[in-house]
Amino acid sequence: MKISTWNVNSVNARIEHLEKFIKKDQSDIYLLQELKTVEDGFPKELIKSMGYKSYVNGQKAWNGVAILSKNSLEVKNLSIPKYNDPNARFIETEIKLKKIKKKVKLINIYLPNGNPIETEKFDYKIEWMKKLNKYIKDLKDNNIPIIIAGDFNVIPSDDDVYSPENFKNDACAHPLTREQYRILINMGFTDLVKHFIEGKTNWTFWGYRGGGWQKGNGLRIDHFLTTANVTDLIKKVEVNREPRGWEKASDHTPVTITLED
Image 1: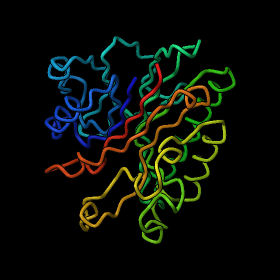
Image 2: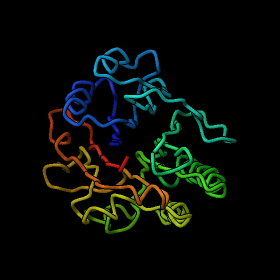
Image 3: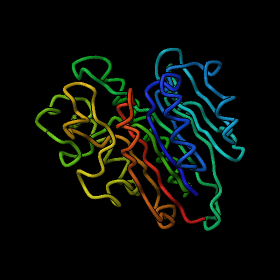
Image 4: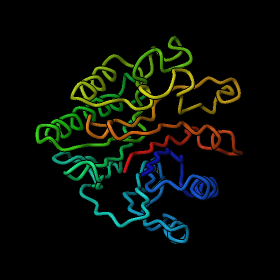
């Protein structure tokens, strides 16, 4: 089984890119973030023509997450349980992997950016992370296998950015952000991109300003986290840089994992 995550930075503005990537990549499941559309505006018919069903948690002009799947799925949650979040940043389903008895929770997130740090946007980011961690801990306490993926807007360490100095006042690299991410990891998750791909070749984002892509000034903020029983089934992890080089590209590029199934 192949699963890909990609912040498309507007699904309709980037639909030709999405179509091109899907036709070549053929993952079983796609986790998309930053749709910037409500469900009615999502290109379900085109996705259907390529053999995928669409499950959408959309929002007008902002945010939005979706799951595209070759097989039918059941959406379990459209927000973090017990958290009244007005924004479309979370969608959860379950998948079956032959070597794991229990169904695997597959959670697609678009975590708040949090900038500027001196504002309520940063407070919202940290609150969101705490609510996510509480929910994930409940799942872990019940020994549920989990995959969490998406745009975390977290630079886990200084090794995950081309210039730590440039991001010392950025919410994605803030000590409180990194602390909440470590709390999540320390529940027993493997950060797959870090674990499987050498540093500086595992960046997933290159900003539009200052020619970040052309200069190779990247960072790692798109992650796949897996519990140990899922990690044991990982055969391959790839950061596909090609779409970032396309004309009018998203500033993120897809990450794909291949699981034994």
